[in-house]
Image (cartoon, rainbow, N blue to C red; front, side):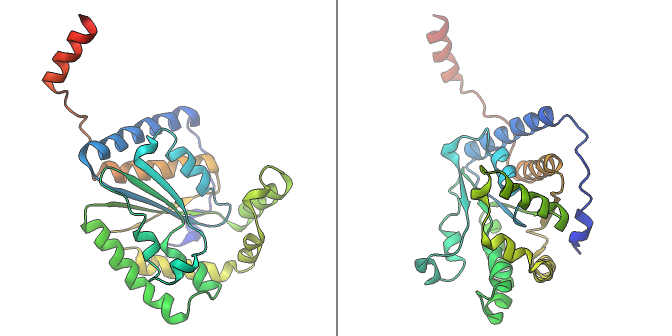
Length: 256
């Protein structure tokens, strides 16, 4: 059982942050190349509290990736067109092609989190969604797509500190809005929804990986390590073999 109270220690990162981050990003770059070469698709999905640090993690995750082979999709309220379809439709249309990686900043779990708590989905709809989500993820994985599910957690005290920083820093104010404070007031309801979400969707084929986000540096290293470990376990990590004819022609051109 996942209990978010176990992820609030906020221990400071004790390693050499810049060096360790650079090493992870180099590893992640090799992992993307492996997906390209072996034509494997992957999905990295992040959920978590407002101001938990999801954006900072995503920024560092994709920093060294070839932009031709990844997309980041920030998920917001559905459009009228999207509402006219089953709730998973808008996510299916952004799934990656072979050799690409898609990163979802929030996800289909909105149906059992924000839509549940805020009343945008009926009780019958969000109750039914657990089975729909598990079926969707199982089919996704069975099709050959690797799925990484991250939840970034912060305690109330740390979240409040970051929300205040967004108000005080004029260049961070664009990152906050009324919904941040409305959601904060319903923290108990969100915690209930999150724990039921973990109970119902933390499956053997698609497990959740909870990250203690109370120290940003430690959270970034932890999250990128999980992504690297899961992705590399599902794609051959041998570098591409140099074609002998290519080597011959290249040496003639470069050394001739």
